[in-house]
Image (cartoon, rainbow, N blue to C red):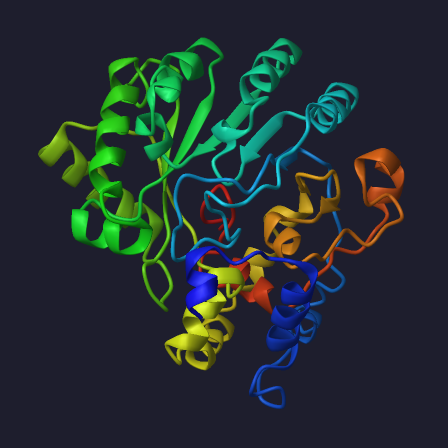
Length: 349
């Protein structure tokens, strides 16, 4: 497990191993498959709706190595989306009129063509342009210090990871010193207007549980976060998104190493909510990997579960073929349908 918790490459052999664990596990005769579960409520197969969100993973390189990271991101990752691939994404956004562009990583800001892409995409007039920032990248070195002003110039919707409002819990999940750098970065964003009422500059935070348990009620947690961050640091933000940790990549490694995998899977199944299935993000989102392949979500991307279509790459992109497909599912999908549901935009019910 040591290798995976440092910076293991999530190659094909590894994803096949994880899929085998998810599909068979240690209780295959007791745990219902996700497919069987949604068949009970006549929701199988999952089918796509209108494509509204194009989510780009522009590279796995990151200045952090977080214990829960489902991307296995880190400083040693070399997978980076090229300028040519980015241009193909822009062409699709322009052609289809997609209203939300969502950039993730790794740390998306570390892609050498990040600023070029933001400037080009801004000209298209995307309604909601999201950059998922780990915050600490803003404080990493001088070339990133102007990111708050750059984000403001292009009206970027900043979505930032923030495990907790306390130093201990944050640093335990994301590394020593992360909390203090995150607080400083949030203050920098506030200075230029982010999170301030009436500014129009959206600053949302993302909470992931620090252990083998499901997140609490999102609205209650948002109130607690807002009060604590305001009282202690005078920090303001718009919304808190509470995400369930899915049992893949580093988090799956953690579950197995801590002997929590079986209990966690049962917890997800017990919390299954058919209402959440109706709004899972894979129905209106396409995830694009750094090398241009298409996935129903970025979790499927980490398991190498490409879209079930011959149009599974930007070079073969075909809106009609992609609409006429079944969404690829597996046991990890229980994570998105537990309780109030979970998506990159928080709860779904």
